[in-house]
Image 1: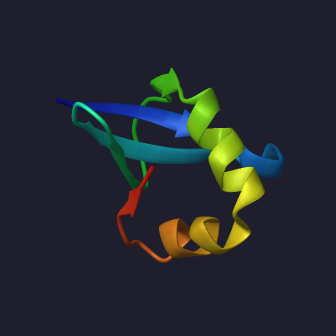
Image 2: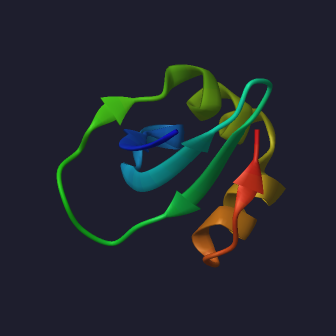
Length: 64
């Protein structure tokens, strides 16, 4: 399944495309569109791992 959403790690809103499986979520940054669903668990994940946030911002897919 695929959906759109956003996360706000450290107060900065980042729009994401989310591909969801049974046991994982893949997040990829997107540039425009509606805010969509707020993914709070993934937001906490990125706040605790700033290296992963840098990878997401570079345009790569991050598995949560």
